[in-house]
Length: 154
Length: 119
Image (cartoon, rainbow over all chains, first blue to last red; front, side, top):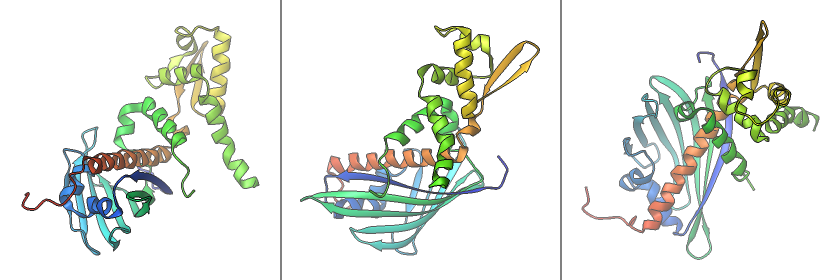
């Protein structure tokens, strides 16, 4: 797909964890901890977690093409908030530029509601390879998960 | 309000088209490649005219297009109807959902306390 296009979109994903906001935050702040859950097992991760610091990851998409991720940390409030910008490349092509906000909200005695918000500029209609590989079945799965996901900003 | 209503109509048609298991079956068959109406009808427990009715709904939704050459009508899927960018965004979102589930598993293991001296 070579046509130039920009599509703007925002989505929100929320999760509740039975740990304190401090521990949930630490899983984002500590490079070794973050590598345990953030990237696929074959992907690398470098993290310089401070305002102005960068994060880089490289891996292989399901169709074999290399992808890369680079983030720049814009705002960090320990145990409360992380704001960063990031872009994604598929091979040499930049496919998206996003602003991501992670909020850690205390709930009950020792729980955290994590709210992840991504506001993205999605470039030139590139598809994510996983969806292309799995075809229409994957598309219907995606539709189903869309229907089941909670509406953002309740 | 008018604007919202107009914007929703194609989505309504899309969801109506996808709401029927036989039509989803036709879409799954066409995702393997184009097929004639007769080929589509063969595995389905329904008459040819019922299949034609389902195909009409699918064509109105934009999910399927067809072309008649001589006496044979061939159908193909139009993935563009579910806009690629929307697919892409949905997959980005589902990527985050599984990633945050992994974070939950990691936190539930309870070994996320900082370890001194591990490389």
